[in-house]
Image 1 (cartoon, rainbow, N blue to C red):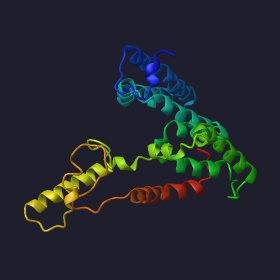
Image 2: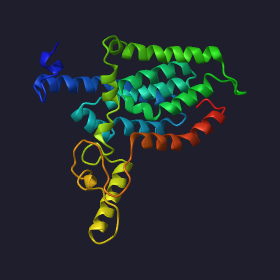
Image 3: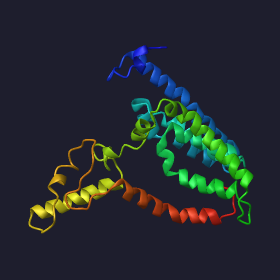
Image 4: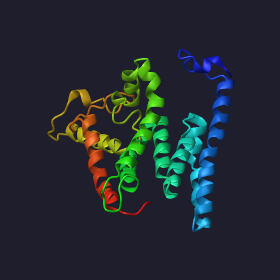
Length: 260
């Protein structure tokens, strides 16, 4: 153990040099996963010169450098796992591709956004023949492999009865649509529109205003987002919108007979 206080849940804001050194070194080492995947893309590319530029742009992306080397989220490492999963799919190792993506999903659940696309792709390319019939043995192999990854990841929490706590951490809906200080997403634009409508209301435009939402969305704190004029958005609404927008490419993927 380099420093026991690093794993002490009560040592909030602990920033000894051992912690910083450990985090920086592990970030740098873990990013070799992405580097190796990108180099493999270059070697297998039909246009290696262009692929070198793309690979270098990804590896030296400011987002990775700033977030990983300051905030220590290890995004480069996880993006590397995603790239290896894509490489396995390109090399016709679909089962290994699915296993790697399951591992990635258990490292960081934000990749759930592309999980439905992965499921549809693997279902079409690994579990179905060109005629569209499902191969039961292939489907069972894929399901068993993915479930085994989840069992290893969640098994200890199930054993300790901590699944409700884990789920509350994985899906923190109480952080609100904007997280903190207006995270740059679509809902920040909706929030801005709500602020504009509220301003127009203060100048005489007749609108129904929720008093609870007057200060809710502009305080810059983590918490539930309550709009003043626009109807409030529930988690179920965001899920439905995401599903609707993903339906069209899913249908195309199911119809496609190409592997990648």
